[in-house]
Image (tube, rainbow, N blue to C red; front, top):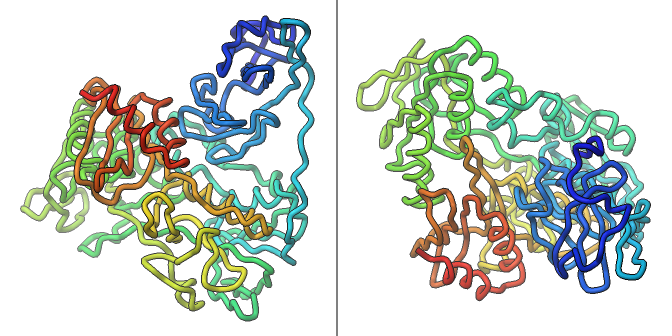
Length: 518
């Protein structure tokens, strides 16, 4: 993320800066060795790392330092300040990291910091098989190698592409502002270099946990020492007349996004079924391509079930200001050639239909194998299933949430990646409970919405700041406790809330609302 020296801001940190110019517990933006660099000081210690997040380029100087970790303000990736290692998704690539030398009152950024090799894993399965090549599966495969596992790793994916950045498929890529080369999480050479065997376009048809084997759709079989189920979810398809017509599409894979783009290039009008995050992101992306958009949904407000009425009204008004038309408290009755007929008899002309009415976790393989099911694959705090050496992560996993004291299942990209990473560590005997606070983000035109925590319901919604002014925290309070917080342009507060939830510090969360409430 560097650039030429003339493009880089701040002082040349290799030439040295006064230690007093770096606030204690704060950062100084500069450059070093042709890279944008961030100098952080804590007492007598100082650290220097790259200044931009390796996920989407977020400015780390606007993030939050917690212990020896720096967290990105945009999508909450975290990195080790001592090594630059990417510790938590969604970032998978390390930051540049340099040694800092103190001479008198000045700090100098020198050569690359020496990386710490991981401690040898306490356990090394004979082999690892990963069923699913999405967020959780890919993150697990990468973490196995980062943790020093040298045995065979096989990742099996039903799609015919390498793992891709799925959140982008309904955002910039669909809008035409992100090139296709941004979409693969890694290129094929990466997997070859890491000795990760990719079986693409292949499904696992049976799991025998007694024999520790999986049967494949191509007739093959793989044995495993440890297995990760990361099968993800399938889009819900409406069982109404015309749902199988070629212009009626869902969005889950890169192939889906490509089909929608191809159809949109010759289209003038599109109908989006469902006012979900995916549906509304698709609506915004297709508006960016110049299509007229109608959104049909049964709710009274978009996203009210997740974000409440205040944010739901704001999101509706935001989309309407960009020309989107809503048909709420309505359902499609049929999809016809060139139109969608609603349940009140009205007809909406269109060239393209995208349905975004939810997903269903792919549980068939786990059910066939006799794993314990509880509205998902039941796992313990280490993400282990009821079968020996079989783990589950991502959309299918229901795990014990330490904050709420309940088992939850969450269909979010970052959660899936972090669970994949945690499962990989635990396969190797690290015994690290999964206690990450759920996080997701959504983008609507120029407005990002971040959400931390988990609230399936609430008794009260509390707002700090101004929703209309696009500067707010929205707290979802259940049984007197703030269970989740959505935010708009309150990035540091969102990071602070995630950290507070992680350590069980409700007082810190309440302070943010108490000092800034409307």
